[in-house]
Image (cartoon, rainbow, N blue to C red; front, side, top):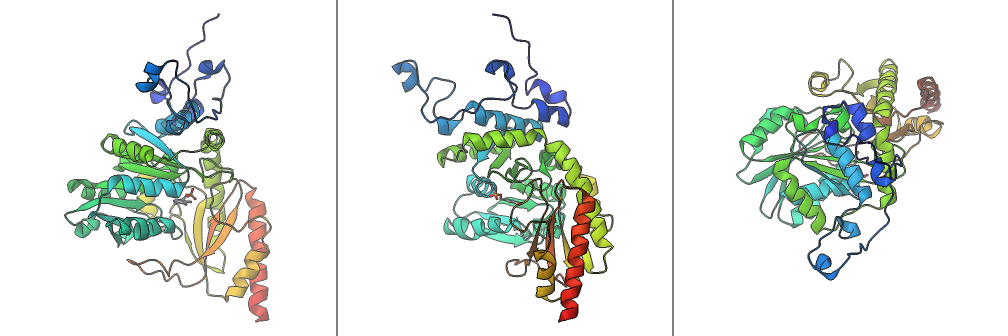
Length: 404
Ligand SMILES: *Cc1c(COP(=O)(O)O)cnc(C)c1O
């Protein structure tokens, strides 16, 4: 048999740049007869060669739930993107399960945690129900308070949860300053890094200890699967890994394969999402119907300086507040849109829009936008078509206002 040529391994790829790592990460073609992509292992039972090996759990793989070559390929590829301070990556069946599991892994009864008031709303629900029931107290803090969060620490504060920009309302957080304050008292920093991904926010370089992503969004990139990832540094990896194992979390191999396929094009997709979203955001900013645009890459956004200092890019999700108009006028605009779908989630190739209102569930801050708020996800369509669709939408909005 001829010898297989060496394939650049994940660890050898560490000097390579991000786009190259996205191509190489988690692959070992010559372990699979030279096929470029890893096979999809469907499996629960793994056979052992003899009784001794079974009793001693001796074997590269033990049981489907505990990992397969398919799950390891995606974990390795994401690990490689997170950088050298990341000690491991665990897969979860959704982004929310990754958030909830990361929190459960780090706390015990009697602990106190600090959570940004602008986190993804289901994260709050996990804190207010599951964690509260287990005797873990959550204090929500103003996402803009930065290092002042230190004033909210209690003796048993175990972690600070950050998400930047904030869900729906796009507040930026001073994550290095928050991390410094947290580490001074031995608390962990857990981040939801779904918006930026490790490509646009290298979380571990900025003081984050545990970084969660909804792989459902940009990693998958095609609105066709649910998946979450938890990446942790050396201090917290064992707790994360053991909790994921103890709670039996695993992801079906076909979904893992699709996520791995999505990951290969993450960088080129994000480039386009970034460019198109900025174009649409600037166009919206110039519209007379728009009160303000919440997009940290816009020069006059309140979070722009932090974004510019800490982030390497902006993805395709942002919000706008319209000048006050009746709800039926907003609905007339939205209901006739041809290219913007209305539905939850984002990160796929298609453009989306949702109306939203944070007023009912924020507790540390007040949501008083001054008009109806819309969140846009800008997909990979031609921006000129998207703008024409929105332009026609504003015409319908005016027609509804004038008819009233
Ligand atoms: C969508 C989302 C999640 C949850 O991901 P699912 O896969 O839908 O459970 C978590 N955080 C943020 C910021 C999200 O946008």
